[in-house]
Amino acid sequence: MTRLFTTTALAVLLAARPLAAGVPPCQTPKDVAAMQFRQLQAELMVAALKCGGGATAFDFNGAYAIFVRMARPDLIHNAGQLRAMFARAGMGAGAIDDYQTELSNNAEIESQTAKDYCGGAALAMAYIVQLPRSELGAYAARTIPVPFGANACSAPVREAADGRNPS
Image 1 (spheres, rainbow, N blue to C red):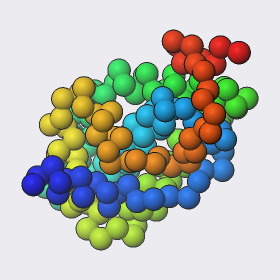
Image 2 (cartoon, rainbow, N blue to C red):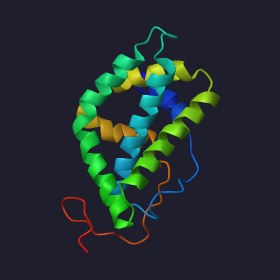
Image 3 (tube, rainbow, N blue to C red):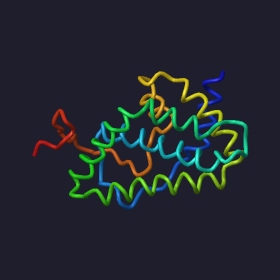
Image 4 (cartoon, one colour):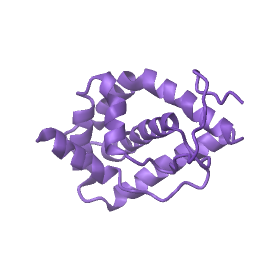
């Protein structure tokens, strides 16, 4: 019951969003997984910034710090995957920065319209920081089935083992 409630609470934070203007035209499954994880991170960051000022008893900043420490290897890995995705489309670091800014801006907009945003965010963050690190990616995939700006490639895109397009 707690898992369903927490997933529902996070769903409030992760409502469907319009396509991002600066995202490459299509993504591989590895790209989508990286986008899901990065979107989860942006949602949690905005919750910590918006709700962490003592408005509630929940320690948003502490929970976000725990998440970042726990997820550091995954954040590093998916940053590389995002760089590869943007590079395949001929887009550089500026496009990645723009995309991450869009993620944060959209999370902030959502926070302004969600009912009891900080209450839902506290439930979600309390649940997430209790997960084993190995389950974070699966959690991001469950709660963000279609990440902001994602558009799966219609034809398979081959990738090298390091995430780069071998062409």
